Image (cartoon, rainbow, N blue to C red; front, side):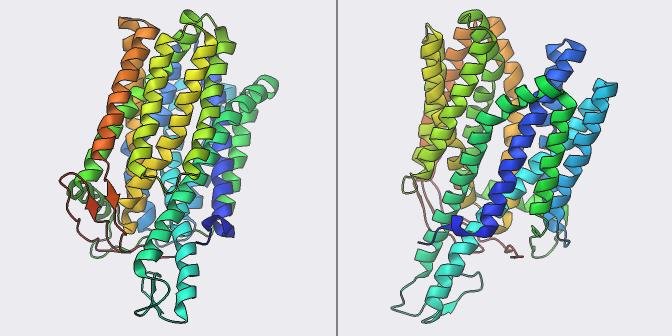
Length: 460
């Protein structure tokens, strides 16, 4: 099968994503530090995180639908340019600090960021699919014909079948998701460390202006993208949102998967407030110990991303469950670890699970969704994660207050591990090849074939 990563267009998308993620870490570290320095309040930092990462959840699906409804090219780049303006305003505001304005700009920037991430993930998967379909279609074109969606449809006895093209296209999507996750994991390790050094040396505004530069680079790299999706009938934003919601309601496996994953995400996000107290008060490891735990988890995420990239023949449901289980076992390991060294070993295992879990979830959602709804469903996943942050952060603080860091991690680990078992049960056991304008046939507990979509994504 031809490799989708050989596509210059896909490599450009991956480069834009990597640059943007690196710049985002710079802004995250800079804003967190400067807000605390000006307010000396952990609540103010929590408010920043809620404004930046949680509140946008309510607006992201509508923004994604609005971009897909637009006929103009460059809509995705406009989101990145908007982020550049908002971040530049934040950098200027740091010289005249006012927390309400910081929170407002952070919320606007976060909304654009989550919407752009959802659309970029969709474009990466679409580009990988089109690359493989085009190459296999041209191989079959001499002996057959090419269908309307670009899949090879050779005559009887032809070398390339519809099913083989669809299977190759789905494998290409998984490879593309794996590449995205490797990029994310690498920036997760490098970004905070580089940002900390930069903020200490040049100040928070300098870090934010570097983030502005990353947005401008991304916008320039993606200026030719056209994420518009044709919609049969009413193509309004409201109708597009109703179509996505209807799809979730009509897909039992997808709905159950998202509900169980939400539980796992809530308890995973609860670990953030617990880790600080755990490193400083329980292990007595100080700031360096806390940083080492985070760095080890990030290194594990890189390893997990590489493992997922080499596990293309493994069932996605099993990978998702195994990744979630590894994270749960890591939290249980935190609860039991008597020293920083053993805690770091648990962190490595948890990071590996994280690196496998995320691309597996994205790949399953894409397989359970018609292509014309991919962008909106990626927006729904981004919003779900943001809402889980909003619930998980205070939950972690409550668990520590009611027990101890070890007790909190034990609860988080057991619930996350239980979620892994539930994910294995609700994940489709088999995903049949999906039609270009329809959803897969599911072979899972109680599932039946889902209805075909009424529209098809337009290729720019």
